[in-house]
Length: 529
Image 1 (cartoon, one colour):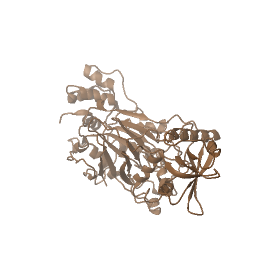
Image 2 (cartoon, one colour):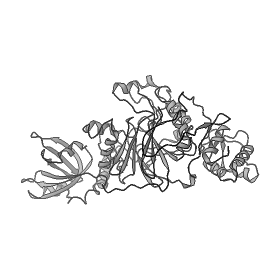
Image 3 (cartoon, rainbow, N blue to C red):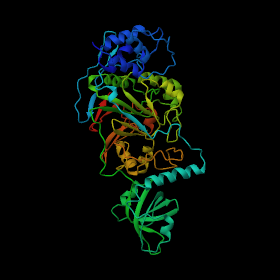
Image 4 (cartoon, helix red, strand yellow):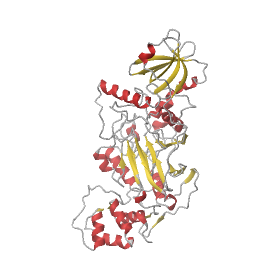
């Protein structure tokens, strides 16, 4: 079978026991006869080589031997083509089931070559056509010291940035200016929600705070927008308009505005047919990690059916972690955190080597728990080196083929679901909770609740630019939909129900992979369990 494209070259090198730099694979693919070029490269690489590098390829094609001798086992390959050391389950080669989506799937063309290795399908385009940019990665940019000034700075930044989106919609005045106005005046204010409480008569009292002070606003129980009060979380940014009472001590609310996504928002799409797989919550190291489902997913990515999948975005919790919840050690298959990451890296090697991979951490990962979470440290990055993934902070925005994807692990979804009515946010429909975060233009608005937040000079959790796709995980439930043309996806997990989840009545959606057509933003869900 002739070599066709980087994926096939990666597979062939895998069968021969080599890793490879991305540039080396590209050079082989660009040769007049890639099969002959690969044979020349294998002939000339020095004994003991682990990573095929670009200089090896150039030397082979020029007819000369490279000057370097051997590659160290600690090298950091750009494209991992290491052999598959993970035991496959019984269903490792089964075809997935398409459960949602607008685009019909092709045939499963996965096969096994004469050497026993997996024969990879050719990716649908040259890697040179791809584009990937990261925005908002705060790794290495943390400024928080825990001082009082840090808390002041982060709330000032939040109010200024989100308030600027609201001040054009109301005749905004600072709290101290409103306090000095005569009764009966028409007023408007933009501020942080400082408190929400009901009155004895069933009305709602909302206290807004800005940089000058606080002012109370009364929402009458018979007004049509009173149900919006149920959506409010402390510390989110809000705008209100109304009329001052006769004594000017309170304002009666006539209208309420969130920063929100404009209803006129039109998402960007790719100029060609290309797809991204959006997954999260792999949880390698747990006794309930679904290795059979994962290997089935990896097998599928090597088929013709998945030839247009060129990006893999993983929204946190690569491993199960240690000490995350009570008695977790009793449910661990791998007890050492570094061994968990080593195992995850081996599973990552099973996916095609020519995918572009982006990963953010989650609350089970070995990073700080407080959000925003910087990307993994250099030690863990060195362990998770398969296919040279982009490792960035939680949250971050990745723009692929012109389509912006806001990646956030999703810990705050627990708080949103707990605080809001079930019809507006629930575990069964996690995307609706995501709609609330889009409406508030902040991924974790409530400070001091269950979600741990780190004060920084800049609020990295603000959704300043409207994304085309909002991707989360954490709650282990599958759900997707569109809010003002923003595609919201919570991608489920790769872990079966644990004893702890049973105790808190969580029934996970496991072994699913949402596939997004970047040219249409249509979603197809592939099921592997």
